[in-house]
Length: 336
Image (tube, rainbow, N blue to C red; front, side, top):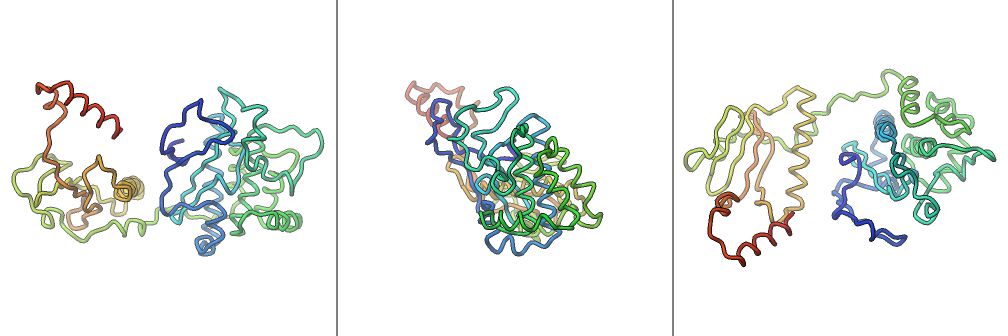
């Protein structure tokens, strides 16, 4: 869930959540809401292959949620976030169905934004009863069509979808029609399976795009660009830590992924997390001056301000006054 959803800036407390509760999330520069993404140049620049890849990624995320019993129940342009590096993030779980807690009950209509995204353009027959997972399937079909067409979600686009989908002969049209019928797929797992079975073999290539590493690559040898002032603070076969011109240098040796796709994905995740830390630059972490892949030495490296302080263990051995202890405790809690 942590990797799938937007993350809270602060943990909400049960007594604070009301119909007027405002959720506050971390949002990074590249992330855009569904309509913002497909209403701008980001969506226009996606070819058909990448759009189909986004549909597959979206279905996979919900397949994973449905496997652990969670249904979103309020999918729409407000709860789907996309970025130019082909990532999808979710939010808006106020009315979600969880197997342990089940549903929010009578207040659903108050809390939900979209509900069943297909209810207007593709209404269900009378007395049709669906599971929470099948309502997600219907909304996913709406989202999938708009991704493939690179369109914003609106009443106009929904009418257009209703008209076009009736006679559409593309390989995915039957799948979307089934998902929107009175007997949709059981859950996103079945939806994804059907999508994968029918897509053309050459449609999507999920090999790692090594170009994503280029912005983080430096044509340097870290030990020459940052020469040690004195002895190493730490030196092993995997890691080096030392001071250089009053900066702290950390190097993880032999971590350049080169042509290893699995390793490259792990490295990219680390690099992106480092970029987030640099972007937010919290006061309680030494300022990061430079980081990335040192190509000539084949390692990952990070250079930060050097803090000439004491370890927690050393401080605990000192005879601190009550006021000093209280001050340290307050700083520690505030930073956490």
